[in-house]
Length: 524
Figure (cartoon, one colour):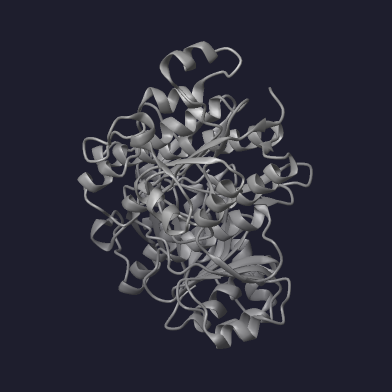
């Protein structure tokens, strides 16, 4: 690659006018000729910067309502020409070299985000801009390409440092930025068209993300990590303002996302406490403070150092209660002044304000890396409803049991499989997660319920009189029997096992009510 390359002619065509006047004036003051189009040319002239219109340079007018203006040999020849190879062709066709291209693209992503109609979105697909960016990035041995106004300062400093030229290192870095931008732009267009067609899993899936932050490390200190934002707009960790606290870690971000997605499932005030991606306490109540107390009571030992999510604006009383516990992160759709003041002394606690809660029924894809590829699936937006429950035992659940069954099954959706959840009074009382055997999950959840009761000085396990949810069917009756022995009175599960009759008989024998959902919630 050639090293310092002088700049005699620049092409500027930008939709984002941030810093344009200063950048244009800098170039003009160094005697650099500026070619420009439409709105960019007007903005530069208003700032006192002389420009040459593209149509004047090419000798060909803009046509087709501006759809064709820079797609011309005098533009792309001037950008793509190898200065030491194509000089004869340039001279023959009167093509002047272009040494700097500053282009950013029509606001397609923003147009889609504001729910513009199909025709408006189509018109905001830039053609000339990406073509010029890609041409300039390809020929970065000779050209400087700038797609982000945030890079103007670096370009100006480099030109100053190299006497009117740019360095090879800067041009290479800017070319990388340019190709990443056009790739992300094309990904946005492809994703939008795919969504418009109703195809969730296209033949060729294009994924793009914008790096928000380099993290200290990944799951472990020897792993590198970064946080990227991308995909459909969704309130959560990617949209949240961090009000206080130290930088979030890789594990913090994963747990925070899991917690916020869980509380978003519920209409009443809800609180979820997450530890290592699994809930150790979830509850709904008439107030956040009451829900928090119920959630914490499920497993206060595991809650230490956890992540807490709420689905309402965080208030002072709830925040004061949270401040008594060591926790890593609190995420809420909002936080009032009293809540912020209550958490402010906890300097290491991260408070995130997301501006809303995610839609549990919203679309989107979940990706998982594999060697040489990745898996993609649609988000688990299915929800069990009261109308969809099938009573399969002699005894039907009471109204109170039915409400707790639906609550427990919703929590189960957010627990690593095999998942068993005991619940009572709109709160979890025992959670068994991630075991290889479902009966082990049932026993662990029961043990947790008994342990929490004993620690609180209660005479009997909190699983007594609870309901139990299973994320998948019971393959044998042993898991159900373990739940019954723990004190559960009603069961919710998908059903569908070849031994369903055996499991139903075991429930009837013990006087349990059981309902099938026909819906499985594996979470691996």
